[in-house]
Amino acid sequence: MDDEQRDPGELPALEERSDAWLVGRARELLAVIQVSPAAERLRHTTEVDRLLAEAQHRGEPRMVAQLLRSAIAVRVVTNDMADSAEPLLDELLAHTRRHGLIVLQADAHALRGRRLLLAGAEDAALTEAAVALAMLDEDITPDVLLGGRNWDMIMAGTLMDIGTVLTQLGVYEVADQVMARANRCIRASAGPHLISVHLINRARLLVGWGLRLERIGEDERAGERFATAAAIAVAVEAPFRESLFPRDPSLLAADQNPIIGAALALAQPSGAHINRLQRLSASMRYPRELVIVAVALARCLEHEGREDEAVDVLGEARSRMYHEAAEPTLRLCLIREYARLSGASGSERTIGALEHYATELEAQLWDMRESRIATLNTRREHERLSRMHGAIALQALQDPLTGLPNRRALDERLEVLAGTPANHPLAVALVDLDGFKGVNDRMSHAEGDDVLRVVASTLRDALRGSDMVARYGGDEFIVLLPGAPLSAAEAALRRALSAIASLPHDLSHGVTLSIGVVSLRPQETAVRALARADAAMYQAKRGGGNDIVAVRTGAAEDGAGGSDEGGADEENATGARLDPAWVLPETT
Image (tube, rainbow, N blue to C red; front, side, top):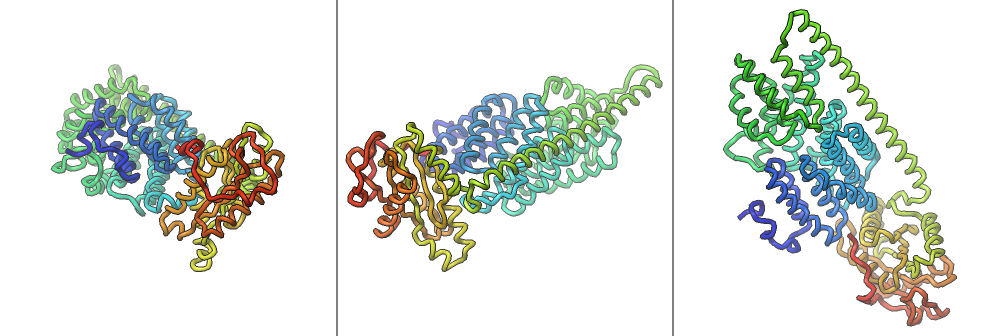
């Protein structure tokens, strides 16, 4: 029995599966949900939630973010489960901000835009799209921990989510630019499924754009859009056969996907498409498919002289779309098509006046579209400038290479933590890289910079959100662990040390960590505490490195109110020993 056919309770234990399998399985389920009835969507969503729970248990930040994204995406397919996406959206935004995952943070804004469109909140959705675009306008350094192919796929997915929001808003020109950018990422790294998704989304964009152009009398430009969509419909055939979408291998993509079938019919309406479109219309689940297939089918029926049947098709679609808020631009296209084929009772003069009124109305709507584009660009620029201003302010406190806080930020934070009793005991650790000089000598400073970035990111991800990791200079880092007794700090730093030692060699080039950690004494200066941590770090390094040395100064060293006796530091320095009673909780 295939995994897709199993009851979620019968699936193999998730703890036996790899991280990559969890992410890949969520991607499969999202593809299946696109064509599933409501009951099956609920079952598949439950499985995605199980995958997310397992990812959160493991705690790897990038995997958690991708599973959160999947859990949201399966919920914003239709209105049925859209409300349950809100807490997950908040969680994804907070998680991606904390871990500096800016592309997935932009995707969270795009997904929120899709959620808002389901509720009919177009202006709010436009703002979310503008924020997402502004974030991707920045010079983003690829995340080396994701790998080049995964990075391209995540970037492409985010761009397609933004493009989908803009397409639904009818901002086709900007959506086209965004989809073109997604295409560059896909061309570099994508497999058949992502290529299929992109081509279907692009065909949908072009069909909607063409229908909109017809409403203002731009029939020639509309025809060009339909022709391009039809060419895409032909091109999607090969990747569709290898995609994750449930499909019948004996049928063409156009017989199974409504957008592809309609794109071919709109480019060249004829009776040859009628049976196919009628079969597709019987399985419509989403408003965008309903409108596009209804218009395509009506035009093919009209081409065969079956106008009455065409009007019936459009009338039924219009009644089904009456209360639908998610596709306002397409809904207007449907109403126009229905009016065009239905005609009007009354004199020729009355009909002429109505047509004139409709023309003027369309002109006004087109101006509104121009206003919407201007609004999008204004909000995008405002968000970009706001982020730039914040970045300039941040630069004074941020190390430009690793993105971590710099020494100035460290001094400010240490002063605040030391002066707040609620943060005591306060552990201070000095971290130095073993073997880093050899990386620079054997390879290049560029490779060394990459190693520093990987170590910085891994250190930050291995610790709690309340802990601070700062770059002290060169290949040295400082970690502040507020509220952590010394043994708990050792346990947390041991996880970080193990995470670095476990990195693939092509990322770490074999570097390890030597760590010295102390507990801040009452009335002790930051300079003195750092000096003690530095001495402990050198003791770890003299012992061969890849180790932690903690400076213990008496039986009460783990207590919040414990005191240190001067002169006991070196005599009580020990290798790290884990005390189960004080182990910090795993990062989630």
